[in-house]
Length: 150
Image 1 (cartoon, rainbow, N blue to C red):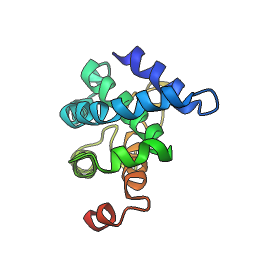
Image 2 (cartoon, one colour):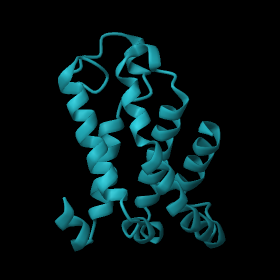
Image 3 (tube, rainbow, N blue to C red):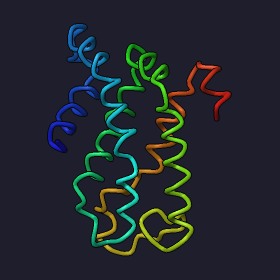
């Protein structure tokens, strides 16, 4: 699943070589990916301990977020995802939970987390909160209803 999402990520982010037919396929699958992210987002909280750094469900969730960020960077797919029920709320709640997890103990979600070794740099959750913020920002772009929710 992670590899498939990484392949989708490459294809979605390469906007020059995507045909309009492929763009329509991505738009049809955008809601499915959003629902998958909403169902699995809690798995990322398992990454607060180093022992769970390879948790597959969490890795899938991180890749789903990456793909959703890329999709919301494209205006043709953005509208589908802005209207997706619960996606914005889930992203906000997940950001809130990861922020709280980082405050409760020193872990990968801690705001003042000082990167001291190579292991921490390659941790799969590095940048997760910033990608949540990117998704929230993209979902609110030129959308008054979503802006009012934030």
